[in-house]
Image (cartoon, rainbow over all chains, first blue to last red; front, side, top):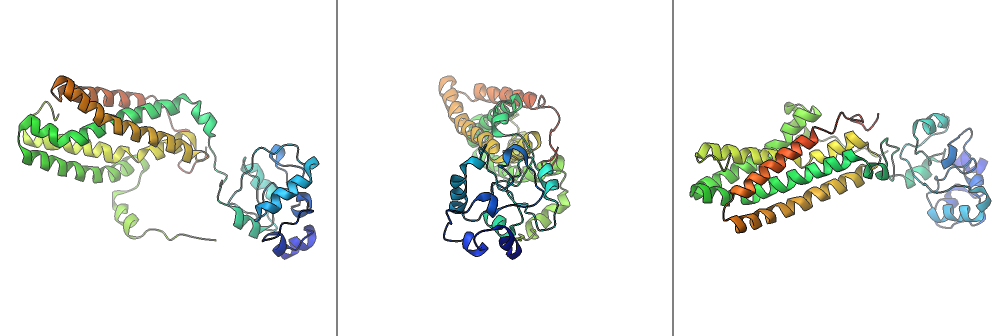
Length: 209
Length: 106
């Protein structure tokens, strides 16, 4: 961080990233990782992300409007680069990669919006017939199963006239509801039944880096 | 099964199957959306699909009540629930193969 601020930033790093925005600083001056190409999501040769202080970032853009031909998608990524990394590899690998740079502390402060995951955008999903097929199927199942669950005691009591059967069936339903999740995970996701106690009792610790 | 059978064990089996279906079905939405559309917009897509699922779940009991009031019996709404669930199963078989891996990659 120190060498980067000495080399590229007009303002010392601790001042640029904290409280006081520095209106005269330009993005290209503040963030200029070497050898990085991002294509249309990149304006000039700087990153769109990297500042931990958003005001500083916005000021920098406003003051250097001629350097911002296209600025419609801003995403920050959790995968940060460290000095010495080939940033081009990361950029080519992640289509939505915009943030990063050698400013590790900046990235750590502004991550959490997008982890560079692959997939369709919401617009594409919304236009997909598969999504609506899936949603309608879920709605049908949800309506049917909820209706049966809510009315199960009344159903059985009206049908058979025995309240104890209705109560027992409700208990069985609750038990089956609990069993449904491991059955689903075992059959679909592949989690072994033997692993379930471990999932509950030995949850992996959260890692913060 | 609940409606057609009057024997107690079969009633319990029917209740068990309903509970099993609900327990397995509710959380599978996120998994299926992730496998078919990736992780990029997973939150929005799952929120939409799950919201629709919950709304339909709220409307289902109400519709069953209305059908019971109209017909005086649970036979018609149970038959409708059976048909709707069968239709949903048929629809889910038309989704095709997964498009994304378990980690959201192609």
